[in-house]
Length: 207
Length: 207
DNA sequence: AGCCGCATAGACAGACCTGTATATATTTGA
DNA sequence: TCAAATATATACAGGTCTGTCTATGCGGCT
Picture 1 (spheres, chains in turn purple, brown, orange, cyan):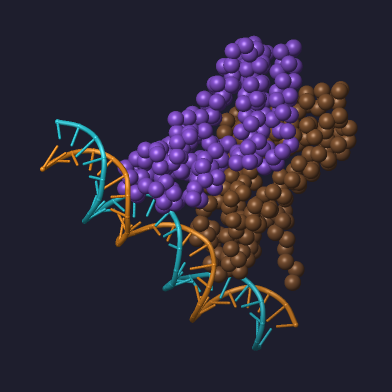
Picture 2: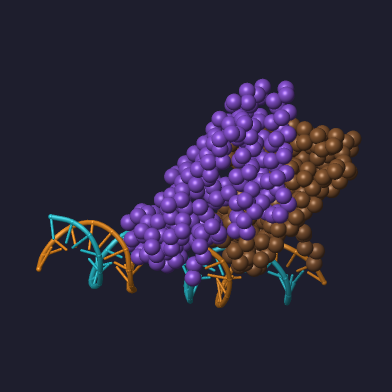
C-alpha cells in the first residue's frame, strides 16, 4: 500500500493513483519516493512496482532514470515557483510585504510532519558538480539562478543602496529556514526568520 | 592496545595517503569521495581501491558501510565544532563578537572552490527519517542538536528577551550561508549574513 | 472487422553492490 | 627469534541496479 504524496501536484492532486495516465502515475510515485527517501536510494524497479506500470511503459515515457530525475526536479521547481508567485502577487501588498509574503507562504509547508527539506537542494546534495548527469545538474542550476532572480525582482522596487546584499540575506533566511525545519523542527523557525527579514529590510530602507 | 581515536585528525592532515595507517587511509579516502560525490553514489569497492587497502582490512576496521558513514560524519562534526570552538573562544571577544566570529570562521572555507555544502546536512538529505541506518541518523541528529546547543550558549550571555528567536535566526543565517555558497557562490554571502547577524543582535539587545 | 498504438508481463543481460571466504605475506613485539 | 597479529590478494555468493528483449493483451478508430 503506497502512501499519498504530500507534495502539490496541481492537475494531479486529488485523483487516485490508478485514475491517472501512466506518465503521471510514474512521476507522482517517483516524486513521493525520491522526496521521502532520496533519489539515489530508490531504484527504477521499485518505482515501476509501486506505480503499477510495466517496465516497457516506464522506459517509453522516461528513456533513462536521469530523465525521470530531471522531470521530478523540474516539477518540484514549477510547483514551488507557482506557490511563490501566488503569495507575492497577492493584491494590496507593499513592496516589503511582497518579500515577507515568501515567509508566510512557506510557514505551513515547513511545519508539515512530512517536510524533508527543499527537494532541489537535496537533489544538489546527490548530484553535485562531479556527477555526470548534465540534464539533472542543469535543472538544479536553473532553479537556484531563477530563485535569485525572483528575489532580486522583489527587492528592486525598494531601491536600496545595496540591493544585492538584501537579496543574499533574504535568500539565506529562506534556505536556512528549509534546513532548520528539516533538522530541528518546532522552534517557530519561519516566524523568527520573517521577523529577521522585516528588520533587515527596514534597516536597509532607512540607509 | 591504545587505539587512536577516530576523532583525532591533527596527525592525519598533511601526510601523504600511504604514510597513514590503514584505518586513517580508508577514512580519509572515503571522506573525500563522500563529500565530493555523495555517500550513496560511492561504493565500498571504490573506497578500497583508492585507499590501496585490502577488502578484509576494510571490513576489519569498519564492519559495515553504515559504520564507515557514521565515522565519516562524526569526523566531520568534530572538525567543524573544533573550528567553531577555536574561533569563538578567541580572547578579547565581546559576547556578540563571539557569535559573529562564527561568520568570520566560515568565510574562507565557504569560498573554497572545493566547497560542496555542509557534509552533515547533505548526509541528512540521503539518510532521512525513513532510512534504516540508526547509527547514521543518530549521528546526524546529535550534530544538529549540539549545534543548536552551542549557539544557544553563545547567545545566553546577551541576556535577550527572546534568546531562542535569536538562536534560530543565527542558525538559519549560518545554514543559509552553507546552502547559498554551495548553490550560488561568489556573492559575498558570508559578509552579507554577518552584517545581518550583527544587526539582528544589536536590535535584540536594545529591546 | 481489422489494424495500430499503447500497455502489460516477465525473462534476461551485464554491471555493480555489500559482505564473506581462503590462502599468503608482512609487520610487530615479547 | 619466532609466534601472533595484521595486512594483502583474490575469488565468490547473492542481491540489486539500469536498461533491453520478446510475447501478449486490449481499446479505439477507420
